[in-house]
Amino acid sequence: MKRSIVTFFLFLLCGLTLAQKELSFEFDYAKFNNDSTSILLEFYYDLNPKDMYKIQTDAGFSIEAIVQIEMKNLDTDQYFINKSWKIQNVISDSLTKSLSGVLAFVVPEGNYSLTVKAYDAKNPTLSKTVKDQFLVRPFKNDKYSISNIQLASQIKKEDADANSLFYKNTLEVIPNPSMFFSEQSPVLYYYAELYNLILADEKTEFTLQKLLFNSAGVQVYKTSKKLKQGKKAVVDYGAVPLAKYPTDSYNLVLSLIDTKTNQAVLSSKRFYLYNPSIIDSSLASKVHAGLLGSEFSVYTLEECDKMFSQVKYISTKKEIDQYGKIDSLSGKREFLYNFWKNRESNSLGQANEFKKDYMRRAAFANQNFKVGLKEGYLTDRGRVLLSFGDPDQRDFFPSESHLKPYEVWFYNSIEGGISFIFGDLTGFGNYELLHSTKRGEIKDENWIRRLATE
Image (cartoon, rainbow, N blue to C red; front, side, top):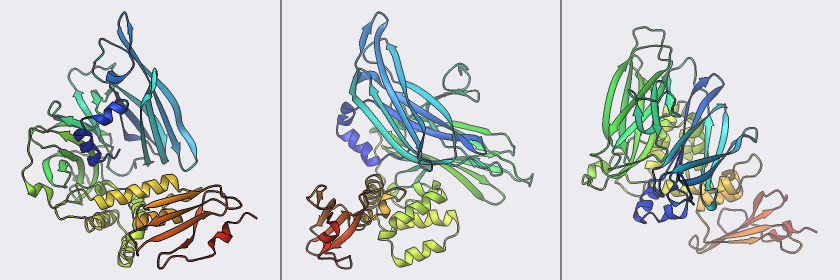
């Protein structure tokens, strides 16, 4: 799941004020191979009961939380999961460590939305909601690949408890769904699975590289090892010491390389480190962000195409033509990486605020302007929002006498002040652009006649 490093630092700088307003609940997931039509999806959660309502019993304090998961297949518009789980526990005192758990489901291929809400059963206002959207694509049986990376707070091999909820493949993998590490927990543990390490050429070997990149895309850690061919899945797990790295967001990348063709498949996981005792004094670490350390290094073909479809409004004709001629996944990843890099607001390779703001608006449009199967960014309101930014003023007219619903957007700093008027002509929430004072846009001074109901 993708997290904003800006949000993370605001969380720290505000003295944990956000945490005081919501339930201390963390959630993450990882996808593993199951069969040719489905994957095994594992959900991990972590609940800290420190702010929850506690009932004193003879055994200690009792707490109770509800976790509701709604997972919908967007292709069929049907819920795959729509269920609540009750988490009850007796704790020895009012301040205790977090409660962790895992849920596993076999999920068929599809495009899914996910909403997870957790709340205190005795105080429902203390809650937290997590939303995401992702594709499920079964792992190919004839192609070597890597599962998602599961981050862990601890992995036990020698003393692994076979009866533990977290036991798998002879290991006890204690999840870390917060994806947060600190000077109190300075070791990152990870778990992943490698599939179909076998090719026709028996002499072929595989190399598995473990890489760590900081938020600027600079590689700060690297190890590698040789792997033998085999049909069975191979478990890769390990630990990365973090004590010497400064506070930042980092990207852990596993790169599985076919040494004969030099082709590779990647899996990556973003995490966050808070380590104030280490000062990052090197400007070099903030320069030369690389594709391998960026989010685009693990984009699927579908994710690349959707991303470019959403950014066409700010693309040049040359860029549109260039992307249309790219016929490889690696080429599309590189194009998108350079597309946003060329629009960075500074030369130090810091977080691309322009990209974050643009994709925030795209997400808003998709959530609020969607009409039937038409994504929100493809609607008239979505196009204007992405082309010109957030309006300075947005007036709503949902129930004017003898008029269909409409709204007016104002931009004060463009061309001395411009406006856009959108109307719901069909009554299905599809607000069409009726008139604008912006040069080059639709102009219809008598737009109001199209809204008349009689």
